[in-house]
Length: 128
Image (cartoon, rainbow, N blue to C red; front, side):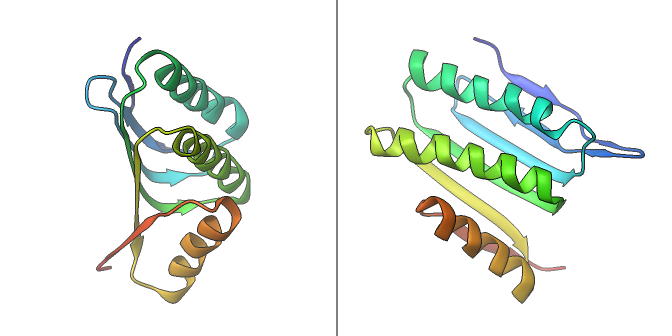
């Protein structure tokens, strides 16, 4: 199993930076997510997670540091969180940290993810 490293791109569409590391179980998605083929992009990440859970069975720490994501990205992020919740329910150790601009609107987005998935997410405000 290999790490995933994707450098973010800002052109007509925005691809987030992704770093998933097998050895540490640390996963980070940062930047902006506004993609043309959102499901295809995130499917690769979800498959990596499922493989990690099946083969490595180690702890996972997820850091979300997204300054912007569109609706289709939001759906894929829920899919990631659902995989994490299932792993947690099956006894896996996870930690999810969501870094957000210290605004009411962004805090509400994080709280919506918590309500939708039932997952405990550490809300970490960052100064704009």
